[in-house]
Length: 349
Image (cartoon, rainbow, N blue to C red; front, side, top):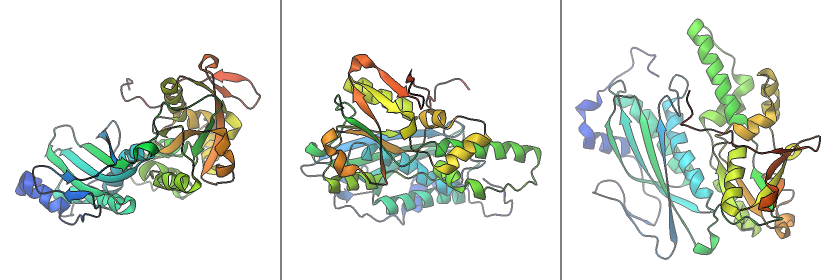
């Protein structure tokens, strides 16, 4: 992160907490009509009139959720925002504002935090959200990031995890497994660098996978596509912890079972080739990898004609009675119970 020994380093202590906040947020412009007051007072003031307010928050910890030896700070700022916005879109809602709180140790100069907030600013611009508040403080554990995302939706458009019905179709956006394999590649090259700091890895063949890990995108476009197609999902969740975990969440909250078809799981060709290189099963990576931030949702069968042929959407299964359980239907047509093997931050390392 701080490899250039000659780069400018401005101590955060010189600015103080309020001076730091003012410095880092001075170039953020307010775009949303619902933002009456942003940063600069005791609290933000938002006005959503008759629409429902949606709030989601995430905590990212250095050494648990990210590694600064290969995660550029600008990418980290962008990703910290995106992973929160994904939760808003998973409610079939529109994201409008965020708050960003940051705790850092004294190894981070002002210039490092400027890089982080530059990434936050790009995310705000791309997704059309306002930064309206947050906090900064010191840490003796490296960097800790807390982002809260706020969104709005008409009550009749909100989608929860609990609405899936028997015979609904199970649909996923994009492709799966890329983010996990991107992480494996970065971790591998980190170990090579430890042994030979002069080595320069050729990451070009893995650019898609690495981008999926370092710069994921929230699927704001899917909410817009579904509205244009006049399709309202019966249930929805974002894929942050792996497809298997998210399917089980939907089934548990909706009191249903499901059949997921292995041959239908969308995999990018680079995922398949990298899986072979790492001697991993690509299906298991898609099921358990996590951090893809695609959307998983269910729709009524009567809506199938509206979505078929859309390159963003893939039907991967259907909902069954709860008594049938949740199963993966393998390519040889055998049924395997789905178990939650995705990301768990409380697992012992």
